[in-house]
Length: 307
Image (tube, rainbow, N blue to C red; front, side):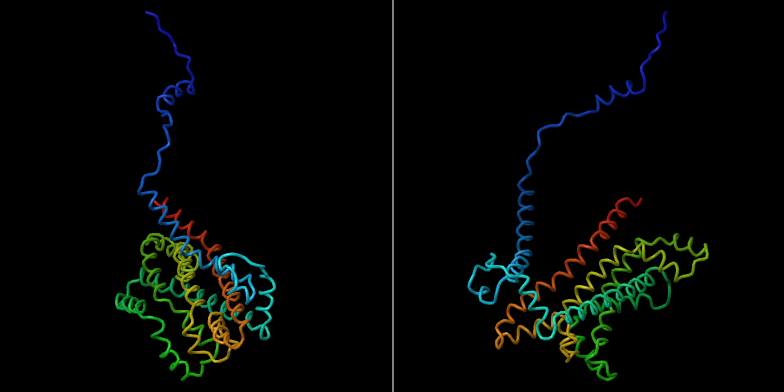
Protein backbone atom coordinates (compact mmCIF):
# COMPACT_ATOMS: atom_id res chain seq x y z
CA UNK A 1 0.00 0.00 0.00
CA UNK A 2 1.42 3.29 -1.07
CA UNK A 3 0.67 6.57 0.62
CA UNK A 4 0.46 9.76 -1.44
CA UNK A 5 0.86 13.22 0.00
CA UNK A 6 -1.26 16.05 -1.35
CA UNK A 7 0.63 19.18 -2.27
CA UNK A 8 -2.42 21.31 -2.77
CA UNK A 9 -2.10 24.75 -1.11
CA UNK A 10 -4.80 26.39 0.93
CA UNK A 11 -5.77 28.70 -1.94
CA UNK A 12 -6.16 25.77 -4.31
CA UNK A 13 -8.11 23.83 -1.70
CA UNK A 14 -10.60 26.63 -1.26
CA UNK A 15 -11.05 27.16 -4.99
CA UNK A 16 -13.38 24.17 -5.65
CA UNK A 17 -15.61 25.04 -2.69
CA UNK A 18 -15.79 28.64 -3.88
CA UNK A 19 -16.68 27.39 -7.33
CA UNK A 20 -19.42 25.21 -5.88
CA UNK A 21 -20.96 28.08 -3.92
CA UNK A 22 -20.89 30.55 -6.81
CA UNK A 23 -24.34 31.01 -8.31
CA UNK A 24 -24.59 32.27 -11.85
CA UNK A 25 -26.48 35.53 -12.16
CA UNK A 26 -29.91 34.99 -13.60
CA UNK A 27 -31.97 37.33 -15.71
CA UNK A 28 -32.90 40.58 -13.96
CA UNK A 29 -36.48 40.54 -12.74
CA UNK A 30 -38.82 43.36 -13.67
CA UNK A 31 -40.47 45.23 -10.78
CA UNK A 32 -43.95 44.05 -9.94
CA UNK A 33 -47.14 46.10 -10.39
CA UNK A 34 -47.22 46.99 -6.69
CA UNK A 35 -43.71 48.41 -6.78
CA UNK A 36 -44.49 50.41 -9.92
CA UNK A 37 -47.59 51.88 -8.30
CA UNK A 38 -45.60 52.78 -5.19
CA UNK A 39 -42.91 54.55 -7.21
CA UNK A 40 -45.56 56.39 -9.21
CA UNK A 41 -47.35 57.51 -6.05
CA UNK A 42 -44.07 58.76 -4.56
CA UNK A 43 -43.27 60.62 -7.78
CA UNK A 44 -46.69 62.31 -7.73
CA UNK A 45 -46.25 63.27 -4.06
CA UNK A 46 -42.78 64.66 -4.77
CA UNK A 47 -44.11 66.75 -7.63
CA UNK A 48 -46.99 67.99 -5.47
CA UNK A 49 -44.60 69.30 -2.81
CA UNK A 50 -41.95 70.65 -5.19
CA UNK A 51 -44.28 72.41 -7.63
CA UNK A 52 -44.98 75.41 -5.32
CA UNK A 53 -41.25 75.78 -4.69
CA UNK A 54 -40.57 75.71 -8.42
CA UNK A 55 -43.28 78.32 -9.02
CA UNK A 56 -41.76 80.50 -6.30
CA UNK A 57 -38.33 80.31 -7.94
CA UNK A 58 -39.78 81.21 -11.34
CA UNK A 59 -41.94 84.04 -9.98
CA UNK A 60 -39.01 85.54 -8.08
CA UNK A 61 -37.23 86.18 -11.40
CA UNK A 62 -40.07 88.19 -12.99
CA UNK A 63 -41.12 91.79 -12.87
CA UNK A 64 -44.48 92.81 -11.43
CA UNK A 65 -46.04 93.04 -14.88
CA UNK A 66 -44.71 89.65 -15.98
CA UNK A 67 -46.25 87.95 -12.94
CA UNK A 68 -49.71 88.26 -14.50
CA UNK A 69 -48.85 88.47 -18.18
CA UNK A 70 -46.68 85.37 -18.70
CA UNK A 71 -46.65 81.64 -18.08
CA UNK A 72 -46.41 81.09 -14.33
CA UNK A 73 -44.33 77.95 -14.70
CA UNK A 74 -41.67 79.24 -17.08
CA UNK A 75 -39.03 81.96 -17.03
CA UNK A 76 -39.67 85.14 -19.00
CA UNK A 77 -36.97 87.84 -19.09
CA UNK A 78 -35.49 86.78 -15.72
CA UNK A 79 -34.18 89.58 -13.52
CA UNK A 80 -33.58 87.83 -10.23
CA UNK A 81 -30.59 89.87 -9.07
CA UNK A 82 -32.34 93.15 -9.81
CA UNK A 83 -35.43 92.02 -7.89
CA UNK A 84 -33.41 90.86 -4.91
CA UNK A 85 -31.48 94.13 -4.82
CA UNK A 86 -34.73 96.09 -4.64
CA UNK A 87 -36.07 93.83 -1.90
CA UNK A 88 -32.97 94.14 0.26
CA UNK A 89 -32.84 97.93 0.01
CA UNK A 90 -36.55 98.75 0.22
CA UNK A 91 -37.75 100.91 3.14
CA UNK A 92 -34.28 101.51 4.60
CA UNK A 93 -33.19 97.83 4.40
CA UNK A 94 -36.09 96.58 6.48
CA UNK A 95 -36.08 93.08 4.93
CA UNK A 96 -32.54 92.15 6.13
CA UNK A 97 -33.61 93.35 9.59
CA UNK A 98 -36.59 90.98 9.46
CA UNK A 99 -34.33 88.10 8.46
CA UNK A 100 -31.94 88.82 11.33
CA UNK A 101 -34.89 88.95 13.72
CA UNK A 102 -36.12 85.58 12.48
CA UNK A 103 -32.64 84.08 12.85
CA UNK A 104 -32.52 85.40 16.41
CA UNK A 105 -35.96 84.10 17.33
CA UNK A 106 -35.61 80.75 15.58
CA UNK A 107 -31.90 80.06 16.04
CA UNK A 108 -31.48 81.03 19.69
CA UNK A 109 -34.96 79.84 20.63
CA UNK A 110 -34.51 76.44 18.99
CA UNK A 111 -31.05 75.96 20.51
CA UNK A 112 -32.23 76.76 24.05
CA UNK A 113 -35.38 74.70 23.55
CA UNK A 114 -33.30 71.71 22.47
CA UNK A 115 -31.00 71.89 25.50
CA UNK A 116 -33.93 72.28 27.91
CA UNK A 117 -35.87 69.47 26.23
CA UNK A 118 -32.82 67.19 26.42
CA UNK A 119 -32.31 67.92 30.11
CA UNK A 120 -35.98 67.46 30.96
CA UNK A 121 -36.35 64.33 28.84
CA UNK A 122 -33.21 62.77 30.28
CA UNK A 123 -34.31 63.54 33.84
CA UNK A 124 -37.78 62.08 33.26
CA UNK A 125 -36.26 58.96 31.72
CA UNK A 126 -33.39 58.19 34.10
CA UNK A 127 -34.15 59.75 37.49
CA UNK A 128 -36.68 58.39 39.95
CA UNK A 129 -38.54 61.05 41.92
CA UNK A 130 -42.01 61.66 43.27
CA UNK A 131 -44.39 63.14 40.73
CA UNK A 132 -42.37 62.09 37.72
CA UNK A 133 -45.29 60.58 35.82
CA UNK A 134 -47.55 63.50 36.71
CA UNK A 135 -44.96 65.89 35.30
CA UNK A 136 -44.70 63.84 32.14
CA UNK A 137 -48.48 63.83 31.70
CA UNK A 138 -48.46 67.60 32.08
CA UNK A 139 -45.89 67.75 29.29
CA UNK A 140 -48.12 65.59 27.10
CA UNK A 141 -51.00 67.95 27.78
CA UNK A 142 -48.78 70.78 26.57
CA UNK A 143 -48.23 68.92 23.29
CA UNK A 144 -51.99 68.93 22.66
CA UNK A 145 -52.45 72.66 23.26
CA UNK A 146 -52.38 74.77 20.06
CA UNK A 147 -49.97 77.67 20.07
CA UNK A 148 -52.65 80.12 18.96
CA UNK A 149 -54.67 79.38 22.11
CA UNK A 150 -51.71 80.46 24.27
CA UNK A 151 -50.93 83.69 22.43
CA UNK A 152 -53.47 85.90 24.21
CA UNK A 153 -52.69 84.64 27.75
CA UNK A 154 -49.00 85.12 27.02
CA UNK A 155 -49.67 88.65 25.83
CA UNK A 156 -51.54 89.50 29.04
CA UNK A 157 -48.74 88.01 31.12
CA UNK A 158 -45.94 89.78 29.27
CA UNK A 159 -47.89 93.03 29.30
CA UNK A 160 -48.03 92.88 33.10
CA UNK A 161 -44.25 92.63 33.36
CA UNK A 162 -43.56 95.15 30.59
CA UNK A 163 -42.07 92.82 27.99
CA UNK A 164 -44.51 93.32 25.12
CA UNK A 165 -43.05 94.81 21.94
CA UNK A 166 -39.62 93.47 22.89
CA UNK A 167 -37.48 90.68 21.49
CA UNK A 168 -38.03 88.74 24.71
CA UNK A 169 -41.77 88.51 24.11
CA UNK A 170 -41.17 86.28 21.07
CA UNK A 171 -37.93 84.63 22.17
CA UNK A 172 -38.99 83.36 25.61
CA UNK A 173 -42.06 81.36 24.47
CA UNK A 174 -39.89 79.73 21.80
CA UNK A 175 -37.57 78.05 24.31
CA UNK A 176 -40.35 75.75 25.53
CA UNK A 177 -40.97 72.60 23.49
CA UNK A 178 -43.30 70.00 25.05
CA UNK A 179 -42.94 67.78 21.99
CA UNK A 180 -39.16 67.99 22.36
CA UNK A 181 -39.37 66.88 25.99
CA UNK A 182 -41.57 63.95 25.00
CA UNK A 183 -39.26 62.88 22.18
CA UNK A 184 -36.12 63.23 24.31
CA UNK A 185 -37.58 61.12 27.09
CA UNK A 186 -38.54 58.33 24.70
CA UNK A 187 -35.11 58.42 23.05
CA UNK A 188 -33.17 58.60 26.32
CA UNK A 189 -34.99 55.56 27.71
CA UNK A 190 -33.86 53.42 24.79
CA UNK A 191 -30.47 54.91 23.87
CA UNK A 192 -28.83 55.87 27.19
CA UNK A 193 -27.84 52.75 29.10
CA UNK A 194 -28.04 52.76 32.91
CA UNK A 195 -24.78 50.80 33.11
CA UNK A 196 -23.02 53.53 31.15
CA UNK A 197 -24.24 56.18 33.58
CA UNK A 198 -23.16 54.11 36.57
CA UNK A 199 -19.71 53.58 35.07
CA UNK A 200 -19.33 57.33 34.56
CA UNK A 201 -20.36 58.00 38.17
CA UNK A 202 -17.88 55.39 39.42
CA UNK A 203 -15.14 57.17 37.46
CA UNK A 204 -15.95 60.35 39.42
CA UNK A 205 -17.95 62.30 36.82
CA UNK A 206 -20.63 64.58 38.25
CA UNK A 207 -24.13 64.81 36.79
CA UNK A 208 -23.40 67.94 34.79
CA UNK A 209 -20.37 66.42 33.12
CA UNK A 210 -22.28 63.22 32.39
CA UNK A 211 -25.10 65.15 30.75
CA UNK A 212 -23.05 67.59 28.67
CA UNK A 213 -20.14 65.28 27.87
CA UNK A 214 -21.89 61.95 27.38
CA UNK A 215 -25.67 62.09 27.19
CA UNK A 216 -25.90 64.91 24.64
CA UNK A 217 -23.64 63.00 22.26
CA UNK A 218 -25.68 59.83 22.54
CA UNK A 219 -28.93 61.72 22.02
CA UNK A 220 -27.68 63.78 19.07
CA UNK A 221 -30.10 62.28 16.46
CA UNK A 222 -33.09 63.14 18.66
CA UNK A 223 -31.68 66.57 19.44
CA UNK A 224 -31.27 67.37 15.75
CA UNK A 225 -34.91 66.43 15.24
CA UNK A 226 -36.05 68.63 18.11
CA UNK A 227 -33.91 71.54 16.88
CA UNK A 228 -35.24 71.38 13.34
CA UNK A 229 -38.88 71.06 14.43
CA UNK A 230 -38.50 74.00 16.79
CA UNK A 231 -36.52 76.08 14.30
CA UNK A 232 -39.12 75.62 11.56
CA UNK A 233 -41.98 76.19 14.00
CA UNK A 234 -40.55 79.47 15.30
CA UNK A 235 -39.49 80.64 11.84
CA UNK A 236 -43.02 80.11 10.47
CA UNK A 237 -44.77 81.45 13.57
CA UNK A 238 -47.02 84.32 12.64
CA UNK A 239 -49.69 84.80 15.28
CA UNK A 240 -47.48 85.24 18.35
CA UNK A 241 -45.34 88.05 16.85
CA UNK A 242 -48.52 89.66 15.53
CA UNK A 243 -49.92 89.79 19.06
CA UNK A 244 -46.71 90.75 20.84
CA UNK A 245 -45.02 93.26 18.53
CA UNK A 246 -46.01 96.70 17.31
CA UNK A 247 -42.61 97.91 16.05
CA UNK A 248 -42.15 96.72 12.47
CA UNK A 249 -38.35 96.73 12.93
CA UNK A 250 -38.76 93.83 15.37
CA UNK A 251 -40.98 91.75 13.09
CA UNK A 252 -39.87 88.31 11.91
CA UNK A 253 -39.80 87.79 8.18
CA UNK A 254 -43.18 86.00 8.09
CA UNK A 255 -45.02 88.91 9.70
CA UNK A 256 -43.07 91.45 7.66
CA UNK A 257 -44.02 89.81 4.36
CA UNK A 258 -47.66 89.86 5.44
CA UNK A 259 -47.49 93.61 5.93
CA UNK A 260 -46.09 93.98 2.41
CA UNK A 261 -48.86 91.82 1.00
CA UNK A 262 -51.46 93.90 2.81
CA UNK A 263 -50.00 97.14 1.41
CA UNK A 264 -49.81 95.76 -2.15
CA UNK A 265 -53.18 97.34 -2.99
CA UNK A 266 -51.58 100.78 -2.68
CA UNK A 267 -48.10 99.84 -3.94
CA UNK A 268 -48.28 97.15 -6.68
CA UNK A 269 -44.51 96.56 -6.65
CA UNK A 270 -44.88 95.05 -3.19
CA UNK A 271 -46.44 91.99 -4.83
CA UNK A 272 -43.10 91.17 -6.41
CA UNK A 273 -41.24 92.09 -3.23
CA UNK A 274 -43.44 89.71 -1.24
CA UNK A 275 -42.78 86.84 -3.63
CA UNK A 276 -39.05 87.50 -3.75
CA UNK A 277 -38.93 87.85 0.03
CA UNK A 278 -40.72 84.52 0.41
CA UNK A 279 -38.15 82.95 -1.90
CA UNK A 280 -35.30 84.28 0.23
CA UNK A 281 -37.00 83.17 3.44
CA UNK A 282 -37.00 79.53 2.28
CA UNK A 283 -33.22 79.43 1.86
CA UNK A 284 -32.29 79.30 5.61
CA UNK A 285 -34.69 76.42 6.16
CA UNK A 286 -33.24 74.48 3.22
CA UNK A 287 -29.68 75.13 4.42
CA UNK A 288 -30.52 73.95 7.93
CA UNK A 289 -32.05 70.76 6.56
CA UNK A 290 -29.10 70.00 4.28
CA UNK A 291 -26.49 70.70 6.95
CA UNK A 292 -28.15 68.71 9.73
CA UNK A 293 -29.45 65.71 7.79
CA UNK A 294 -26.08 63.93 8.08
CA UNK A 295 -26.63 63.64 11.83
CA UNK A 296 -29.83 61.76 11.12
CA UNK A 297 -27.94 59.33 8.89
CA UNK A 298 -25.29 58.91 11.59
CA UNK A 299 -27.96 58.13 14.18
CA UNK A 300 -29.64 55.59 11.91
CA UNK A 301 -26.31 53.87 11.22
CA UNK A 302 -25.50 53.66 14.92
CA UNK A 303 -28.90 52.14 15.61
CA UNK A 304 -28.47 49.53 12.88
CA UNK A 305 -25.17 48.16 14.26
CA UNK A 306 -26.08 48.32 17.93
CA UNK A 307 -26.05 44.79 19.25
